[in-house]
Image (cartoon, rainbow, N blue to C red; front, side, top):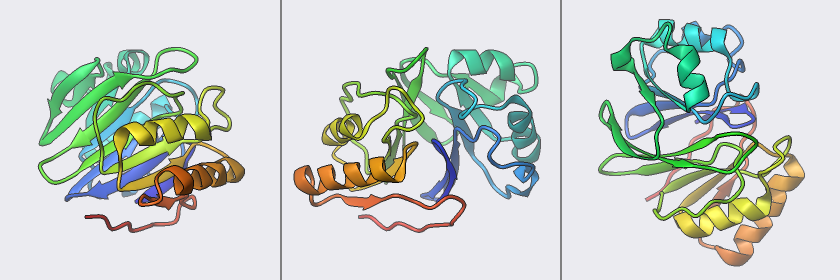
Length: 208
């Protein structure tokens, strides 16, 4: 796992490499991506999506792209139909992965994602406020706030209570907001592993 900042994160799980909301945080290093299966964008705000970076990522990897509508309209000019997917509420298949998209709560439209295979499941909460999540996930990437006007530690806890994850990874928030979420989880879900990753520091997480 490599945390880029905000809600941008590269995850390797079950032999698949998944990139969420990279914005422009790869800063010219897009061509160094050796393997990438799918890129997902929750919405088009500056800290989540950057057009030139998206172009570079696709050129370097030929990955599948999944995007909320505003982003989808921008990437359709350079990504062929068979490599891009409009994120609609519901379930669909992207390559060898199952994707479930739900609409979050933010300033403008935002899509949240659960990806899964036969052996694992992973949820990404963008920088959304709480919305009911009627499914579970082994690993939950949950936003705690800053600079989002909608995300918060309390909203992240409610997501975690729905998802029943084995691991919670805090994203899109300040150190103090991450610590608040950690405290809430220790009180309400003490069995859950918690991590607040450092930016650009490769990290391994084990779960069963």
